[in-house]
Each structure stands twice: as C-alpha cells, then as structure tokens.
Amino acid sequence: MKYLFIILSIILLLTAPFFGQIEINLFNINDPAFMEYKLFWDLRLPRIIVAFFTGALLGLSGLIFQSLFRNPMSTPFTLGVASGATLGSAFAIVFGFVTLVPVFGFFGALLTIAILFSITSKIKGYDTTSLLLVGIALSFFYSAALMILFYLSSQSQSYEIVRFTMGSLDVVGIRDTVPVIVVSILLLFISFKYKKEIKMLLTSYDNAFLKGVEVRKINTILLVSVSVAIGVAVSITGPIGFVGLIIPHILKTIYKKSSDKLLLATFFYSGIFLVGCDLIARNLGTSSDVPIGVITSFLGAPFFIYLIIRREKI
Amino acid sequence: MLKIKRFSNAILSNITVHLKKDENLILLGSNGAGKSTLAKVACGIIDSDRVELFGEKLEHLGAKKRAEFINYIPPKLEIFDDYISLREYLELSRLYSSLNVDEAISLLNLDALADKPCKTLSSGEQQLTMLASSILHNAKLTIFDEPTANLDPSKTLQVYEMLKSDVIKNRIIITHDLNLAHKLGYKILYMQEGEVEFFDENKKFFEASNLEKLFGSSIKHIDGYFVVNL
Image (tube, rainbow over all chains, first blue to last red; front, top):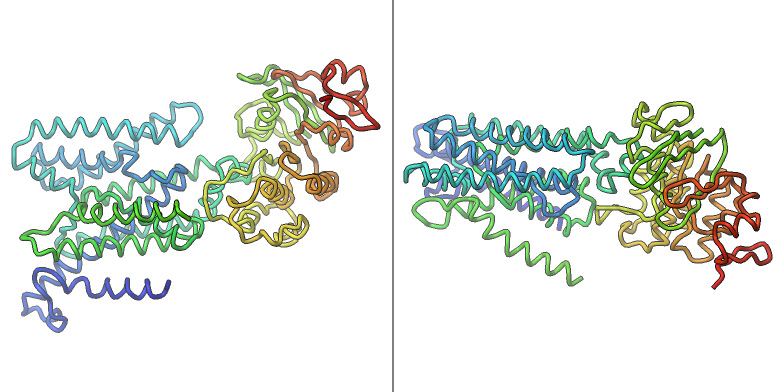
C-alpha cells in the first residue's frame, strides 16, 4: 500500500507536465525548433516544480506549527504570516510597484514575524497560546487594512489583488523556481536537525524542559524558519490555504505514527497534492486556469470532513 | 543538595527549604496547599532566583546540567501526540541511567504495553510509565508528584518498592498517603495555604500531638497504620 502510493505519486510527477490545454509530445521537448520545447522547459516544468515545493513547504510548515502550538488547527495562516504577505503584495499592486510584488509580500511576512515576536517578548513568560491569539488578532487587522486598499484601488487593481489572494502557480522560467526550492529544502533540513527536540515537544513543554531541551530557543528557531519560508512562498504563489491543515492530518490517520516520523512523508505528499490539484486546475477545460486555492479547498474540505467523521466513528 | 530561600509568589509565601546531601523528603499538605507549585519552583518550570541545586544557582545552570541535577514527575502523564508509544516515550527519557529502555520496561512489568500509544494507556499504566521514565532519566534529585494516586493495591506496592530502592538517587515525594510517608521514614515537610507548617524528622511528625494539631480528628492511628476516620 505504502509503495503503491509512492509509485503512483512518482508517475503523477513525471506525467503532469505533459497534460494541459496543449498536449506535449515527449519526443519534441528536446528540440528547440518545436514550440513544445519552450512550453515544456519555460512554463510546464517550472510550474510543476513550484507546485511541488510550495505544497511541500506548506504541508511541512503546517505539521511543524501543529506540533509547536499543540493545536491541530494551527498553520502559518492562523498566525497571520500569510495575511501579512498578502497585504504587502496588495500594497505593491495599489501603489504601483507591480514588479516588486514578491519583495513587498516577503517583507509583509517578515514584518508580521517581527511584530509577533516583539509583542510576545513583552508578555511574561513565553507561551504559544498568546502568540496564536496575537496572530489571530493580526489577521483581522490585516483583513481590515486589505479592505482599505480595495477601497483605494482601481477596478483592475482590485481584480489583481483578488486574483493574488486566490493563489497562482504561474511562473516563467526555471530561474523563478529557485527561491521556493531553496527555502523548502532548508526547512526540511532544519526540521530534521531538530527532529528529536520536536519529538520532545510533542510530549509536553514541561517534559521537554525537564529533559534538558532549550524549549524557548528551539521554538524560536522553528517558528522563524517556518515564517520566513512561508513569506517566500506566499510572495511567489499567493496564499494557498488548506494544504498545511489537511495533508498532515491525513498522513497521521493513515500512518498512525508520531509527527516527528512524518516530516519527510508530509513534505513529499503535500508536494504531490499540490501538483495533483494544479493538474486538475489546468485541465478543467475552462478558458483560463481555475485558481489553485479554489481547487485545494474544493477537494480538500470534503475529504477532510469525511476523514474526521470516520475517525470519530472508530 | 536543595536550597530554596524565602520564595514567594501568588500561591506560596516565604518558603524556605534546605535539604542536606542525600536527604530525601516527603512533601505533605492538603489540596491546594502549594505542593506541586513548590516542586515546579524547585525544578525551574516556574522561574525564580531563589533556588540552589548542589551548590549552584538554578537559573545559571545550562539546560543539560539542570536535567542532570533535577527531574519532576507530574501526577498525570501529559502528552500531545496521539501515536508516541510507551517505548518511544521511554527512549526520549533515557538520559543518565545505565539501564536501557528494555530493562526499565521489564523492571516495571510493562512489556505487554511497550508498543501501545501512551494516550491509550490507563491512568495507572501511565503512572508506571512515568516511574520508568524517571528511572531512565536518573537525575540526581527526582520529585514525584503523587506517584501512588490512580494505582490499585498491587501496583501501589510495586511503586513503593521502587521508590524505596536505590534505582532512584535522591527523591522528594509528594503524597496524601500518610502510611506511605510513615513507611518511607523520610524527613517531612507539611504545607498549609502556601506556607511551611512543619519541617522536621519523620518521627516527630507522627507524634500523636502533632497529628492532632494538623488533622484534628480526621486521622486515626490503628496498629501502626494511619486511616481516615470515616
């Protein structure tokens, strides 16, 4: 069963670039004379790469956040990091820095992290619940700020913002994929480096503390790493919700293993999930691609609810 | 070994405790007297600058050194993850013991449960799991918070034998069980409403006049055993 999943996933990865509004013939992709050459190397392949690594990063971030916050609902989106990035990007669109949208998005995320940590360091002690509450408050604040931007923007700008918030995997050229690849691999590396500490935190904070884990330091390292990675991803693809929530949960119910053992599986299957969703988005036969965020939620939500019901029954 | 100097917070007021080298302790007191709070202060879960362990200030100890010096076993196993098994939990706990995980599992007769997730264990089984974890952690000083609550008589006996034995180095035991306190014979600290009410030798604590003073008529002394006067 496990191997079947892996094999199916790899087949999906290898064949995904060849399906779309224009079918690609495998034998033409190595010959620059064909239009398919450009289509494959500049559009399809980069898109699959971005889909895979963005999905992987979102899923892994979700798993790490759920472990740190000991709350099955938490993802970087709950903390307002993604909303911060969205607001930054919308700001760039409205005030005419269109080419700098990713940069503004990234700084929106960074600013959010800075605000979160400066506020929580003032709260006595250091508990993740207050961090989560501050994050939720920030999200509401950002939504209000986004409304103001909508109010100030022209119609075409509004459309652009809405389109951004729906998420998009449009990238051109392999070079655009580099940032997502780098941050997602880095995040995977960091999570493996602190695997044992994560497992300790999965018991209880007190227990980790008593066993000699520097709880505060480890928490900060992981939170900042995830937030930076999310900042990069959101600035490129827009906020794509739900991956970080459902994939870790699905894997937990299937594998029945502690979260620290699911880091790699979450990374891989979240990537596959987004590639699959993108494949559907590109092949629904509509004149333009359906936004990826719509597909992830449409597919994910019912399946997720089904799993919850099934779990509660047993 | 352990020094707490005039510590106060919302629950505790002006607590001073001084344990000499190799001196074990029983911590008694009614519900809400502040026993667990005191334990958390001693092990650093609650911040303070009033604790000294083995001659060193607790707040200056590195995380590893602190773990080598002191451990606290809470009354209930707290675990977030649904799938961490008993064996995995104990693997995480093994720090300074010469015993390996399997030996600790056999020592407490937990073999049949080893691969079960901790969350599915009964409260008594979780209690034994935590005891095994304290043996594997093997800190110089371990505080047990009500180690015999939730246990059936045979397991209570098993835990008693373990607490008495030298698989555990120095220990502070929080309990409501006067017989356990009496049998172990350690020095006794009795707390009331956040203050130290009694801190002296075991024998003196169980003198009839002292018991009368602390418990009124709710405790009866029959044939060397202390029972609640129902």
